[in-house]
Amino acid sequence: EFGPPAMVDSVVSWNGPILTYRWNDGSDMFYFVYLDSANVVRRAHPGMEYRNAPDRD
Image (cartoon, rainbow, N blue to C red; front, side, top):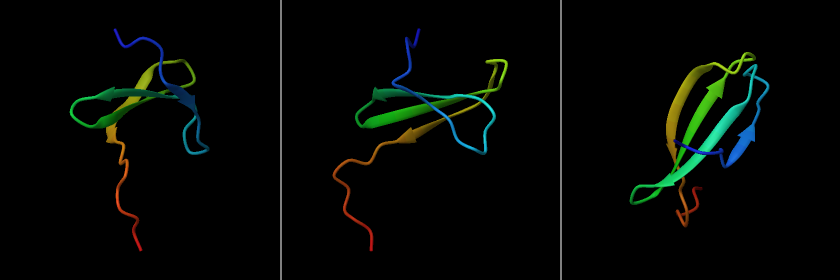
């Protein structure tokens, strides 16, 4: 019961849409779902959003 994604994106290296979901579990998080051209999930992984992080040199 995720609801609609926050963003639907694409990249050249993946043949299908990438759905980005957001949630907060003590810190802001992403969950990326990679669909193929038939809208079947082929890959998924979490990611963290770094806000107010120090700049890197």
